[in-house]
Every structure is written in C-alpha cells, then in structure tokens.
Amino acid sequence: MTKTKQKFCVMGATSFGGRAVINSLLLQGHDVLGIARRNLPLEPFKISNKNLVNLNWLQADLVMDTGKIASNINSFAPDYIIDFMGQGMVAHSWAFPYQWYNTNISKKSELLNNINWKEFLKLYIRISTPEVFGSVDEAITENHVFNPSTPYAVSHAAMDQHLNLLNKHTSFPSIIARYANFYGPGQQLYRIIPKAIYYALTEQKLTLDGGGLSERAFIYKDDIASSIDALITKGQTGEAYHFSDNNCVSIRSLVHNITTYCDIDFNKFIRIGADRSGKDQRYFMSGKKARESLGWQPKTSLEQGISKTINWVNKYKDFITPDLLNYHHNYRETYERNS
Image (cartoon, rainbow, N blue to C red; front, side, top):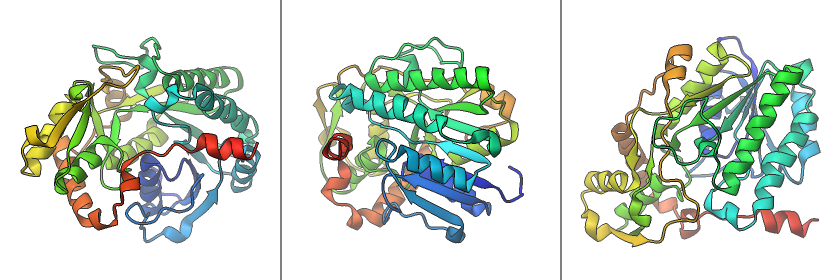
C-alpha cells in the first residue's frame, strides 16, 4: 500500500475482520472512520493501537441510521471504503429472512445511493461470502455460477449483483472480495475455533452440528489485512477476488486438532448435535486469481493461527462470560421497537 497518509472508512467496524483491518490501517498511519452499530469494543475485543488518535468512530445502525451513515461518510470523504457491514449468521436467517434482505440489500443499496462517491472515492471493497455459490465439490473460482441455499446467501448474492450493475452502468469503483472463514485472536467467541478452544481449556463439552462433517477453509486475521493492501495496490475495479488458504478441512478434524493442542481426549470432549437447516456441505475457493493478479499469499498456517488463538483465549478467559459464547440476534427487537 502507498505510504502516503490516506482516509479509510471501515463499515462493520466491530466485526472481527473490521477490527483486524482497522488495526492494520492505523499501524500504517492512515486516518480511519469506523462505523458500527456498537460503540468501541472493550476487552477482550479492544482495538489497541499506538495510533488510536487517528480513529474516528460513528455508532450507527444501517437499518435505523442509513441517512446518518451516508452523511458522515460524505463529510469524512474517504479515499477507500472497506465494507464488512451487514446482517450476518447463516442459520438465523431462516427465522426472519426479510431482516437479511432489508439490511443486506435494501438498506445497503439505499446507503450507496446516498454517498457522493464521485467527489472522493477511489475504491469500495465489498466483503462478500463464498456462500453465494452454495455447496460445491470443486475449488470455486470467481466465475462460478451463483447457487445460494439460505436467505443469508441470497442477500449477499443479490448485493454482489447490484454492485456489478453499478460498476457497469455508473463506473462505481467497486471490488468484491470473498474469503474463507475468518479466525484468530480477538474473534467473537461463538465462532467455532475460539469457542472450541475455550471449551477445551475450561473442560466443557462441545456440540458438533451434524457431527462436524462439513468442510471449510480458514484465513488468519493478518492475512485478511494483507489482502486489503493487495486489493488497493493491484486490484481492478469491477472484478471479484477470492482469498483462501490452500487447505479445506472438516470441522470435526479441525476440532480434533484443537483437542490435540490442548492435550484433551477428543471423544470425551464432543457430543453430536443435529445439523443446521440448509447448511452447505463444502466451501473451498480457488485463490489462483489473487495469487497471480495481486501477488497475495496467506502467510499464517492453520496450525500457527490456532496456536496464537489458544494463547489469546488463555490470556483472556477470565474476561469471558457465558453471553459471549452465543450469538445474540438483535435486529428485530431494535428495529421493530422503534418503527
């Protein structure tokens, strides 16, 4: 990335990926506007950085405060927007699909329509998901046909297509980036890697949905940040890029490895639970385009990353309370109470 100080807006700033990118941008000396529906995170998720004075923070909800977010972005006039913002969690999208569609399609497109991007924006990077392709046996390329199998995935596929239209018809400077599963120190504890580690370190049983037979690839937080650098320096607008480790592992084998690192008996650690509705069996993206076009390679192996995450969980396990181990869906309560 250029060493000239520039202005970045990170949407979805309290997400794991958002915090990883903000930390990297601050270390490089850039000015950052972080936007999230929550305030600055506290321990164990705190953003600790010597250049924290360069971080501007806007607490705002995409559904409730669409105009406020657009106004603040226009005032800040960022050179780059990195967009992690949206309604997440696959399984929960079946309960109230309209909430995912309203947030991830309707409100996001409204926000983009109100940004005066022609006046300042060099690049908008949308963080999308391989779930737009559904369950696929072969390595997924950027040209693979969309086949979403959950409301969550449908909402992301629609927004990806909307951005492609904007780029084609208005030259909106967008890039779509899709990633293997994020992980690393600081990740929300309801995600599989930190949750399995915490349960292992505290001698609790872990439930494996469907026996843990689904397969995923993983990408460490530092490799997320380096991919953003690569997109800014070498990425082409209107294109999509996939970022993934070269290995795809079953959740069962992933958890087995964690129990080995933690020196506990895998068979005594797990219990088998029912599988999630509509869950795709396998995601595995080809990173060939990112390697050849951007010169990007993941630098942290899954073994190294798990070891670092174990150290983090061990350090902060006294901060961890039961509510941090479960995802809390709050769109419906927040939005409908104020409607």
